[in-house]
Length: 540
Picture 1 (cartoon, rainbow, N blue to C red):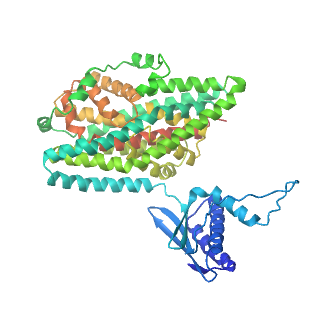
Picture 2 (cartoon, one colour):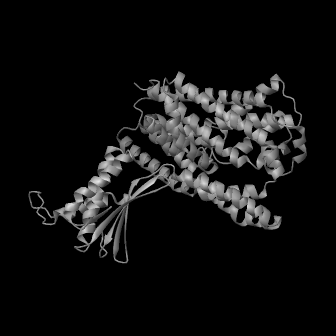
Picture 3 (cartoon, helix red, strand yellow):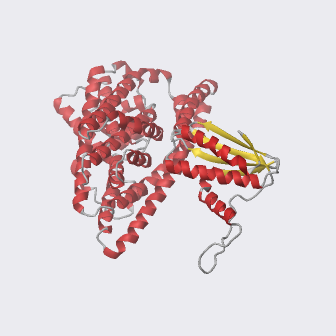
């Protein structure tokens, strides 16, 4: 749409913009604020455009994002120029330029939604009307597809020496930097999220009700996940002794870690209490960090006059580290591109084809678990499970690309709030779930453990099966919510059930892909439990 540089044209222009806004189903608050920004931007362009000039209004859509572009000929100007409004002694405005001052204040307040530029004597203002939550998802899947093509080309075009050099010098380095950034932020995110949450509870009784229900449901879904993995494996029963000949020594380092690890529920409980305040953050020990956060959160509400400034401090730190997390995850498409290119380029085709049966069984078990979440939401939460899945689906897909339960926390908290879960519940249940509620990982360990046991002819009687179930539950509680943790936990499990550690090399090549699916289900379980607790009358 084009309009003449005349204020009488403002009305028709706004009618056109308003009609387009209504198609986007914007919230009333965003609708009003954005429309006001458009009006003031049009006035700015008209003031600096020739009398006989035109203003062009154009909507642009890309990957779910909607941008409104306003452009017209004119000299460059400072759109956010600060203008003072002098007041008389009685506090009333007497500036003759009040209109421009108000316009400046409006545009400055909305500066994060628009961008101004002048090129070849043409002023352009681009206003962000709607930001799609799926943009990151589109970029990630685009990177995934590109990595498959690129990895296949490099596998054919480059000799093995060049492939290893490219992987070592570039692809692995990018992936390592991204994972290090995630590990860096995990501790502070969990700590400040739980402290800021617990400081909102007025009494320990309320906290006890929430904590007991959350913990009980997490343990219940964990047990269901293990039984689901075992049941689905028994139905499909993938695996063949022929695969044993494909075992390599690629898992040597992971096996060494597994052999040095002991499973003990008593040690897990005792080690929850750290011997100093700093080491848990250095070791990324989530259980110890959660313990310290709970202590600090409870103590903040018990120190009288100092409570309010401390609450504000912890809430500010929580917002800070959540914002840092969102900045880090913007690099997910690059990390996925490097990681998947490396996987496709270096993994043999025979190995990939041989384990498709295991992969299909694992995906089927995850699908069953998602259906179980829906049933729990329906039966216990007395809510529409289809509505829950529909609203959480975009976040579930985003978390798929993260491959880290802890990095998924900000998105899970946002999903909970969209579902109506109070902040004092989801700010506690989501960080806790990211550490102890690893349903996807439980299914992974159950299916992979039984699959590899079948490949190597290891028979598991009732006693051994019970031991495996117990081991999986303990491992899932103590597992860190970071990429690669599932492989280490599986290696520990294989040692416990008598499967050769070298068997791990059969599935190491696709573990990064499996990790994405695990995290998507892990996070869905966290949100489902939070929703059930919130809607089941915990807080009255």
